[in-house]
Length: 475
Image (tube, rainbow, N blue to C red; front, side):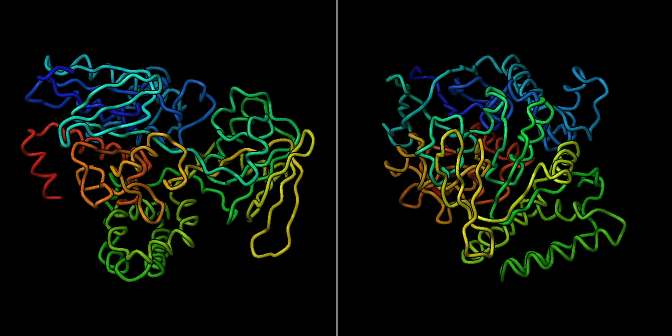
């Protein structure tokens, strides 16, 4: 970085980092700009859209997966070059979506202004230090190298799941798979398998194994409530109905009081949608569209109550399965090759070539035992930063540059995407885009929300420096 060149380092090149870089390349910048996109893995892919994920399908139809909020069918048009008959309602391979992100990043790079360039770096950032507050950051890499940046955008994607009880005794063994997305590179799961978690990840892994001919003899799945996500349907989207049947104000008023009242109104809206001949998913999509406003109004104790008692029910209706995947899961359950339990895993123990699983069924005191050949952690990302083993997050917390949310839902951030430091103020020049924005918005995991955050952040970073400093001081 020269003294005359502004440098924005984006740490993470999955969906969020890639889309932020794409939008920065498209913006008009008054000064020379170098965008450095950093990831230890292949850029524009991330874990979810890696090439080995060919067996996995997107859980959202192609017509709602555009990386641009200004062109809703951009991904569909790209996909039709590979899948000519693809429609907006089709659920396409995740690996194809990775190709799409790579292509769109390359297009944005070629179309960028002469004073804007993109640099790709394959490395892992372990530390970020403030050298000149509000002016220069020093990024430290695994190999000991360092680089300077005027601003840093953190976009590391989803954190790994929390470790299961007894993980230490099994770590490194083929009997425990802590990263379920690594399954395509493993040997075929034989015998019996325990999936800890019954959400989207569990369903994706089961369906992919069945498709690839690696179906185990018997699968058990355990989660706290034993709930499996609902099926997607071709319901009317916001573009068609514009939610004219739904009233926002009662929900907003209820959110100021209690989550119980909110859920009562949500259930009522679902019933009314079906009574009109529609689909309850229309009501859920409407609630999702105003979820940030509802979350902002919920008092802290009510947010905690939602996380303890209602989150699982929201998740299985909000995060739904592609019809083909849902059909596989239901067929396996009907044939008793997949058994779903509600309960809590207490401990994993090595027993020769198998794993002894001690678990407690929901609502019971006695402990039950399962003997399985393999355990797969499908509990989903753990957003509690207090338990992170990520060296970069650990470094940022130790330096007081970021502050986790008290409820363990992510990182505290300002409206412009700036990260809140230990003193409750934005760390000037340090931003975040990704699922840990759920601390402020709750709904911050899907393409439709994350692309909007990436676009807003790119616009913010394209503003003249004097305006950015003023906005930071006002936060």
